[in-house]
Each structure stands twice: as C-alpha cells, then as structure tokens.
Image (tube, rainbow, N blue to C red):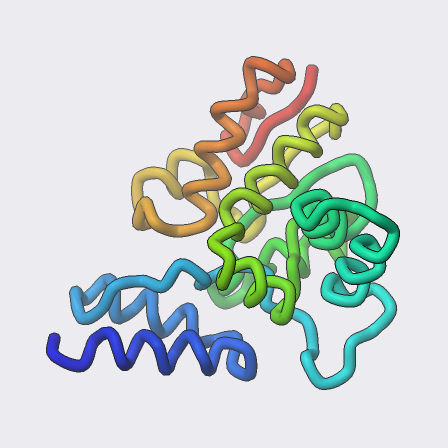
Length: 196
C-alpha cells in the first residue's frame, strides 16, 4: 500500500489520545493493509493531561531521581496493582469480559501498565519488550503464586488464534520460557500458571 507507512505513523501519534488506535492497527494488519507498529496494545491507561500520584510516568521520574537506572525505574514504575497473582491478557478485551488491567483492579492482582507517556518513551527507545519481559520475569522470580489470563482465554486459544506479534502471545511465550526455572506449571483449566 502506497500510504501505509504514513497511516501507521499517524495512528501511532494518535495512540496517546485514542487508546483504541492499536485495535485499528490490528484490524489493518489482519487484512494485510499495514504493518503493526511496535508500540501497540499495551498499558495505555494514563491520562497525559493530569498525571496522578500513582501514574507510571511520575513514579518513573521519581525513581530516576533516586538513582535507579532507566530500566529498573521503568520496570518498577510499570508494575501495578497488588496481591499474589499476576494478570496478563488483551488490552482490548472482547465484549462482556474484562481486560487484564480491569481484571486485576476489580479482582486483585498485579499487572504490567507503563501508562501512555512512559510507554511512548520506552517505544521511542526500543525498550517496550525488554521492560514488559522483565516485569514478568521479576514477578515469577519473586514467587507470585499464580499467573492468570483475563478475558476467559486459555493459553492454547491465544497461541492458536492470536497473531504472533500480539503482546499477549509474547507474554505467554516468556512465561513458558521462565516456567521451569521458577517451578511454575500450567493450571488445570489451561488459563494460566501456578506455583505448586
């Protein structure tokens, strides 16, 4: 497509003010109209106009001011929530289901969310995958009791039906990579992992 790169660039620029743009990019990618940008489908929940005290961008800058490295500050700032489970899942959940952030917020759990501003900064530096992967690694290393997929998906459904470029597929592959090292096994329903 002749104007494909320009359209993708415009969508990337609009992602800050329109979180649904990654879904539009995904639709264009599935129909073969465009390439998916590196910065789609993750943690775009911050309000860039009014950053709250728990906003990842503010926390990130505070941690940098305390002498943390950029990587460590980004990992700590983008690890959100509380509890003894980690939640992954699609950012744009199917109708009638909760995305991973809402699932963790409403039912307890930790999750990855860099927020719009920090996510954009990480994307510009090519660090989004490294930070997302490190958050998962750190949660598993710390021995979080379980990891759940939101939105009613099983691990196999995601691997069989989602494009391999989707963040959720990458997160599942990272968890599978780390599972043996940190003694995690797939749960009986196939919707996540537990530490027996």
